[in-house]
Length: 102
Image (cartoon, rainbow, N blue to C red; front, side):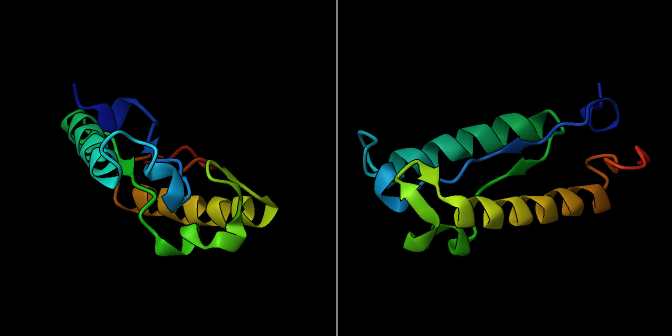
């Protein structure tokens, strides 16, 4: 089954402050390995994976806590995610959410 034609879905990594990644047993390395597994699983099913890999999402002033953004962070993340979904639509991985056209 070609999931790109039957499912409007993307898997999105939610950003967490850099300090939060240190809470993993193996730190940042564990986080990176987890993202590799998720990317492999989603891409093998024809689904877009959107990693939160934009350094602009990790500025200290965007965070309320290490795993919750503040209002400014939420606004910036929403704009960033909207752009990423737009890119997925342009690449044919998702239908346009407004017109529902491929």
